[in-house]
Image (cartoon, rainbow, N blue to C red; front, side, top):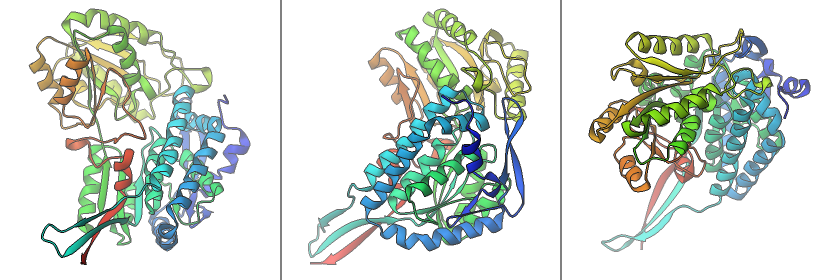
Length: 486
């Protein structure tokens, strides 16, 4: 596998002309901004810095393309999505190298993300052609009811930096399958992957104006412009709960259809009946995939007292064996995304240690200019520690020992978040526990919950709506019913 996209591939992105509007790639009205490799702090590319004017132009193009795109036969849209998937797999190594370059994650993680991201195009290519609707009789008689679904319209998509391919395709694929056109704002930390996917979509034959991309540093201005535009009827946002609250307030002004995938504080519960070896393997995935920089990452690990010593010893050995470093050195764990992220994780751990927590195990980090934080296991973490209450977004595993199931469940559910959770134990016990956890998704005896065929989303302040599965398509459809005299 390549460790860096070749010069031809990277140059072909023409990132300095990275605003895509109506099939034309143009400079950003505000000039350019730089994207750096967090593993080295070297500049990767200069990227077009889009503005509110670019945002409006993108909506102009999406609105103009909407009638023709929504009128296409579902089979035609399906075939186009399938072609995009094929092209992503054709360029999988280059895309993985690009993700690793701008995000810093390991090549193993990046390659896995490309495959996962491409699957959304296949899944929604299949969903696009499955009929949906209903026909029935009124209970009172005399009428028939026809229920049909229509595309919402122009959809504004806002994606984060931690999964720059998957977060884009998880929104673009169902929107296009439903017949919507889109305007996309990728994270300014990792815009290159979105530009690459947009170019592959054009190569696949997706018509001009159906997908428009506005990278830029003024995220608030760009997204606010879209939310204020009466032609935008949908916003799908993945990011922090704090920003999600702001966007929900703005969306309320025009009652815009919203999907929000927000923050998490996932508990990872290990019972006394658990297969400890399997639980450790699951924890390594749930906690350390992408260096812990995932909304579904295990944030708090609750281990029954009967197995706590064995679990901690096994997990600690696995963590100490992790290779930390740049992607091109075959690492397991890459850097945090920025200096700010490094400072946040450092502060959470330092605060916990000052309050009595113990650093039980740690991996080594290389001498580097990058934002590398050592994968860490902590024990004796106080119940009121911010490390247990805030989303860590880093490779830090705080372990809490429990022996009373009711007290443990109360602590697990004592959070404003409810995105993901994990339970390891004998199947019956694990399922009973899973049903009592306030989370939209629960991994039972496995450390991964994401799948294009499953409804991804949370409860409480972790979001509104679902992505993936049939539910993900329905997020981009409006229901209409016709009452017919009979």
